Amino acid sequence: MKEIKVYLKPVTLLSIGSGVEEAVGSDIVQIRTRTERGLVPYIPGSSVKGALRSAVSRVARNYGFESCGETLPEYVKARHVEMLKEGKECDVCYVFGQPGPSVSNMGKAVFSPFYPDGEVTVTSITRVRLEDSSLRAHEGALYTAECIVPGQTFSGSIRIIARRNGDVRKTLQLLLLSLASLRTDRIGRSGITDVRIELADDLKALLDSKWRSLASDLEGWFWVDM
Ligand SMILES: [Zn+2]
Image (tube, protein in one colour):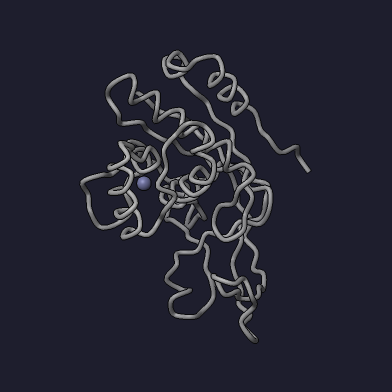
């Protein structure tokens, strides 16, 4: 199986809301799922995918990948048309899929949900609502957000569904770059999350020494325990 085992460890408070609450103007509730242990906070695969996508979009071009650098479907489409004229194809959308309702390009990486490996503590904090564009505080806009307290590891996996070796290699390289970038980027609204992976030998074998050294760097935690 072409799969990367991924462990996520929140370093700061982590808030993964469903998004629905924000639209109706009430408070943010941590997403939970029903398991044998009852209702358990977890990180949906789509949240991890979105965070990795935006983390890697900022750095992809520095490492020789093509990126449209866009997230809104209409801008992505327009930029891709321009890129095609320049003889380029967007590697970020190739791996993470093209945003929008179309199912024609789902991407080459499939994300599992990330479940906690033990008991999770959730706390509520009060925050100031910021205007997204200017990061200025809305007048009087306080809200509470449920957050996951650091201390627990969440585990899940990313499956690579590309077939040819060259395509698997490109997908794997961009995923490794995104996982390394996420360590200093953010997931959810504000959380910094450490990342550690386990990589099967047949996937490692596809990498040259430079990429293999990034992979082995990712096999240990980045942030020291505080
Ligand atoms: Zn793109």
